[in-house]
Image 1 (tube, rainbow, N blue to C red):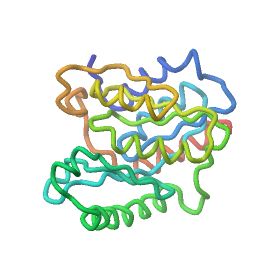
Image 2 (image 1 turned 120 degrees about the vertical axis):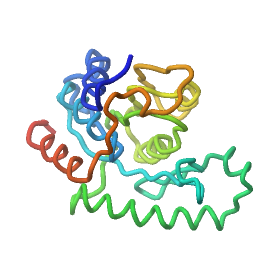
Image 3 (image 1 turned 30 degrees about the vertical axis):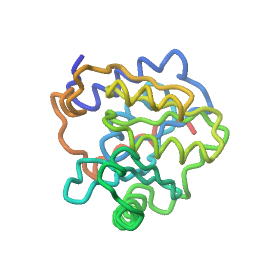
Image 4 (image 1 turned 90 degrees about the vertical axis):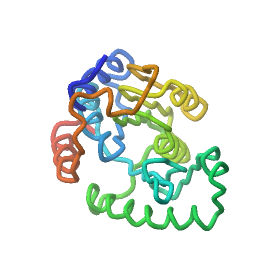
Length: 217
């Protein structure tokens, strides 16, 4: 199964989640920006649930930023890919330097997307974390652990496509993983979309504003 774009993937994912979560008053859908937000918007619409963002930043290997050595999330959570860190021989100094750069961008995005609203409150709620796909899963794991620290009722990871090993490993950190497809070989998230154009800050803000006017909180 290929997806036309993120909206198509979100509608399909929402339908998979509908029977269990639609209409539940405690459900909160959190999109990981930027690319996870268009998917999460459609999921929230199908479930008639509120939508918000949960900002996560990948910690890329210096000079090879597409390779994740970990991730940081709102609230200060940091997750490391120990296999990558050990293989490259990175110490705390290199990791801290990368984290400092990404922490500034994380703060910028929180201000850009959420303005002066307070932090996301997941306490006692069923939180559905949504992204457009999972490769290493570092960003999603950071998000899941940060949300878990708030005392939610349930944490669900929902994605259209994932590397099979990644989705299995995530099950240790969350209550449920919902994934429409785990292709082998996986290649990359974008390989399973016809249109995988970058999502802009303006689109994230537009979708959040649209969700705010339609969701019942």
